[in-house]
Length: 215
Image 1 (cartoon, rainbow, N blue to C red):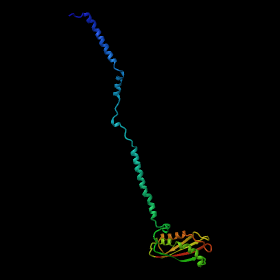
Image 2 (cartoon, one colour; image 1 turned 30 degrees about the horizontal axis):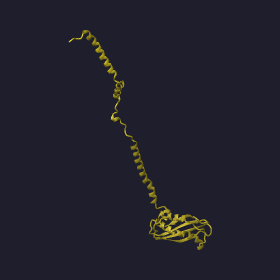
Image 3 (cartoon, rainbow, N blue to C red; image 1 turned 45 degrees about the vertical axis):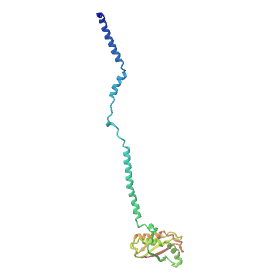
Image 4 (cartoon, rainbow, N blue to C red; image 1 turned 135 degrees about the horizontal axis):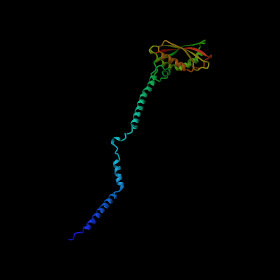
């Protein structure tokens, strides 16, 4: 076999080296630049820690607290507003409420025992309009008797009335009675104040009117 000439061996060595260098350069340029630049960015992206998650909104809890506080204040206000109404209803001193009560009448008899016309005359003709004006209110006087301190004990009640010439509401003065009970006295006075008197026979008239309560 024939050996290659020394000259050919010497020339082929530089060509092989140049070919290998060129191949290495082409392979390095074949890598896209975007892939090389994207890798560091992906590594640099920070990962948010689990503890950094935003806390849940507190608005629903605050609304629930405000609603509970409003309910508590409303429930506390209801007994406070109800207390004056209860105390007013329990007050026995209101004459209108006692006189207008629809409950059973107390077992007491009420009668007119005296009517004195100031300056006269004292005849039945002069007294008649006054008698007719007061008589329809006897049941109201009976209801007032339930407010006396001792409803088992009877007694008299006197009062002065000034009736104007055209009648109407009288001026009520000087209530007097031996029956004890301030609420009872106020109630009877209140009944006289509500009476619409008929026109007197002889102009303005002052009359002393007396009632007797007999249980």
